[in-house]
Length: 176
Image (cartoon, rainbow, N blue to C red):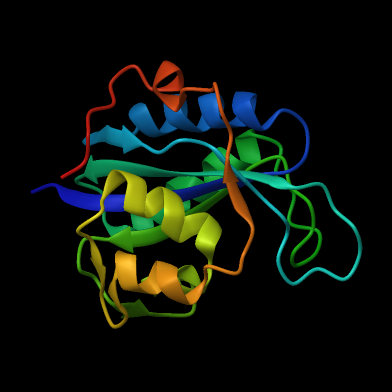
């Protein structure tokens, strides 16, 4: 049985578009997994950091997977590592960041995994691309994406023009 999962992508070091290409290829190669959609790219300022950092490039990827939430998270961490991510400090700049946002309707609270992602409902850079590919989605425990977006409208998030992420995901189809 396949589960619809949503992955948040972010990068603010190196070439974020090459990092996205790497992530999409690695996700597409996971067993029993198929990418179904990829949002446009968005630029956003880093949140919660005290020292200056470059803006992030963000997107959301939808996929159908037979992997459990924990197995998918483990795969995401491996893809990040292969993409040059080193976890040196919280909120440090990074060449690739992959967050498991949702895994079906799962609600999980464990030492290694929290679903839905604990800050997803507070981040316009996640909600805007999520609403683009799954406008009717409701976040367990938080409600519809559309109403959550209203609460973060003061966060600066700008669509990156003229870059089509579909060029990075040859097997992507629109999400439900």
